[in-house]
Image (cartoon, rainbow, N blue to C red; front, side, top):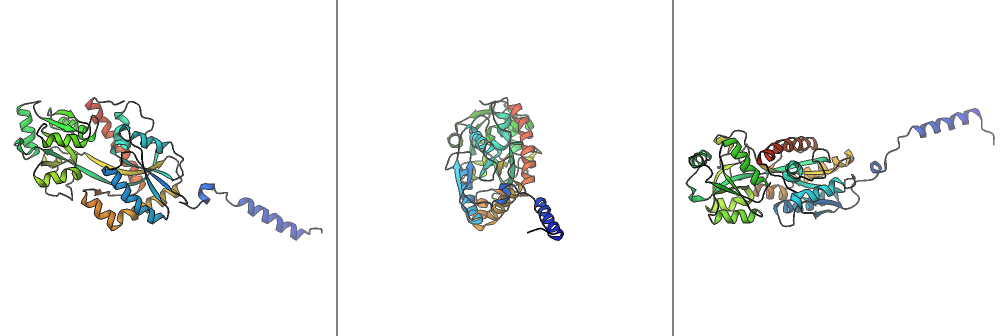
Amino acid sequence: MPINKRQLLTLAAAAAAATALPVLPAAAQEKFPERIINFVVPFSPGGPTDAMARLLAAELTRELGQSVVVDNRAGAGGNIGAEAVARAKPDGYNILFGTSGPLAINHSLYKEIRYDPRTSFDPIIYVGYLPNVLVVRPDLGVSTVQQLIAKEKAAPGKLNYASSGNGASSHLAGVLFNDMAGTKLVHVPFKGTGPALNALLAGQVDMTFTDILTAMPYIKSGKFKALGMTTTQRSKAMPDIPTVAEQGLKGFDVSVFFGVVAPKGTPPDRIKVLNEAFVRALAAPKVKDTFAAQGLESAPDHSPAYLGQLINKETDAWAKVVQSSGVRLD
């Protein structure tokens, strides 16, 4: 059948319209999420980070309608798990529950590290931070940070502090304290937080810097004396303890922050879906109440941009402390 002029114009218009339609990439067309999300925790099962992740994963599963499964990939201070996510396909199905170590400190601490927290990830959400606290043995004879500084300067190099290992935040907190206070506290590294606390309980060391969650029962029982919170603001969990900063070391700020990131290049729409799900999960009464009881301070801003800024700032700040400590790990 011959085609008249009107039919020809109609066909041409239809062809032009079809050509003009945007061709969306497969990732944008696919509903997200449609399968299990792998929630990597770069530490061993049973620790505080793992417990937090499992609580969040259960709530996220309800929010997203898909299973969110915790995958523990421990080793090298969190670097193994972080690198695994950095190298994963950027599709939103592999995300990292990171802390200050793998997301800031380790970049300058480890000689060989095959990712950069500032460029290898797309931030999803800043969850919050866990304050550290400076605790001493009760018979040390000091009740304030200034008394501790005076006691150390009266006999330089005589007082010591325990840490959970070389390069740990409990070690670097002491380095920063020495730098800011002009003291010479001697570092005594242990293999983990447990052994460090046991040494303090036994009176083998004078003090330590540890997280509020771990220290809280010992402080309440009188086994440790708390001298100061290491954050710029007092802890909501123990508001009677003044900060180190308000006792003369202005700007002293050491805490463990928690953030969730995805591999670089993850589609923004998927980052948005994950961020909104995490925000709802953090607002759930069970999650909110549990985290508050553990001393976790809520983030002032849950946006991806805020976490990105925090990672950049913390990475640069800790690089200076690591350089001052002289410690480099293989």
